[in-house]
Image (cartoon, one colour):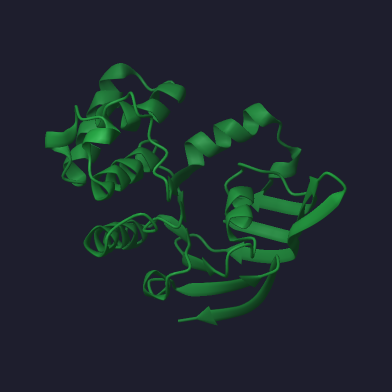
Length: 224
């Protein structure tokens, strides 16, 4: 489903060159639960952003469903992201002025989904994540766990094939984090490919495969 060939990402900060990824080759099978681990600055988030079409590699190629995404322009990449990939971030990234309902609905609006179908999908997701009584609450009125459930519901709105989660439990208490992980495992069992970046061994234990990064390179792999 996802394939990276000798991917390198270089950031230039003034005269200094920072090599965030250094010749990474990796593939992710359809329906896999992949965990990416490594210390801060190892390139985990950069790798996730490139797999999610949020960033482009400096060198190398990235394929999604067999398509070389380096050939796509920004508009085509945006359409691919919106139709194929759902994102879950540590900071939730919810729009503070919008309700839970509105945040979940937003990607459906961008995708041009008719209003009646948007309402149906949002209500279904609110029910699934036990947020029906929080539909009209803004993020500031929700707990961290509730905000992350809204974020996961938003990620699922366009029925993606892939979920990318960047430290999804990083800002949550233990109980809320456990609920989020249970939801990700359930989604994977339903056939969605899930890729999780984490530094937490307990979170990593859900992976079918764990990739270890250091200094922008894959330094180890564990298959369960």
